[in-house]
Length: 198
Image: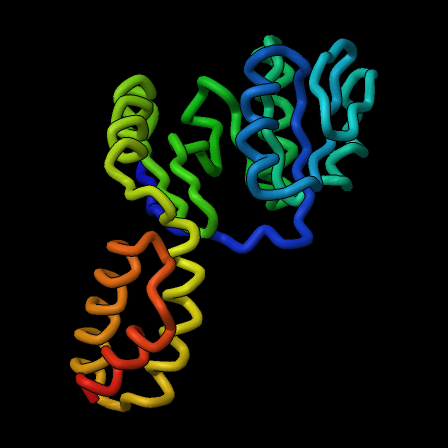
């Protein structure tokens, strides 16, 4: 499996999850951090917070899907659905079967708009999880606020400072100031950094 780590805009996209057990629930939980456009199809399911159709999968269900996750305990059904998705150009994830996957679920770190995905291409999900825990422990407190503030200041810097090398230096100084104050640095201090480095 050869994976390229890119991020895709899923605004307005629909996720179809087949299966109602613990594995499907874990996939749904990860998706819920990014979207509420999730439909689960399973004859039995305790999954909460999303639309659940309690019945067997039907081929017509793929009309609901921009992405599909096969998380049933029926390997034959998972493979059949993966083939149908491939025919229709629907990206599919088949749990525990990388050969049938068009995309994978990485171990995720999510703090506001900061998203870090870690994958071992299925070789060791346990190691990916360990790395996720280590990265989460390294992240400074208040990183969500820091990113929000830095995003607004970055646009201001782009307008004020045409030179790219200076902009990069200023953005690093702004980041340092925001991290020190957990995003609470006064606007005057931030503007001062820009003025001092123009």
